[in-house]
Image (cartoon, rainbow, N blue to C red; front, side, top):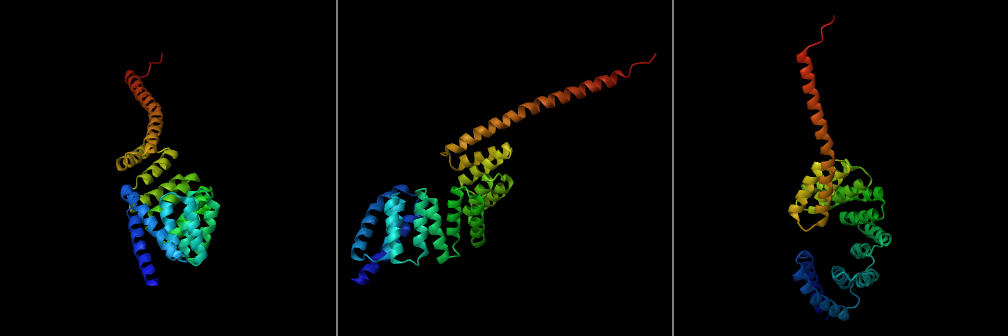
Length: 267
């Protein structure tokens, strides 16, 4: 029986991994989840003391946005295996989905005590601090994450958001630049950089970023809104510039006429 249960756990874990990897295929994922969930229910009835089964079922509940069920499963997994950092990290992620960021941070703290070199947990804890508007604390976590995983575009993007919220727009733009080099097809990063450009008065650069975001994902309403605002602001700047340019040209013409006429003769 134990061999059978372990075989089930392995097979279900493989199926769950496939479901998570194919998360963007929404229709396929939704069709497979109920069957997968029932399989885990049956496995837990056969082996009610398996932390791994509760953790995996909790991940499924979280994917289904059944967060309270997910919390119960992650909490049970922690009771059964309190030394698994993943259990605390998963529960922290779920608390974050529920907007309970203080409790999320408490779980991330424990996860990092157990797994201090996990860049993803630092990034997630930084995101929770960001939600609490503790931007400097968030930046510390993003720095740790980047130090551990320098090719993680998400950490650069999130750190850019924190710098933007602190009004450090150029520093934010540098982080977005880095994130875009690592993940050039992420529309949200172009939007974020566009916001930083707009906030710093660089409207033409902002418009270019919103254009690129729309090319990558034409269904993001915020990109169109922000682009419209940037275009309006740029138009307001261009109008006085055109007037100033015309006045300068007229002044040069008048000066030329006066020079051609010569100075008046003294009597």
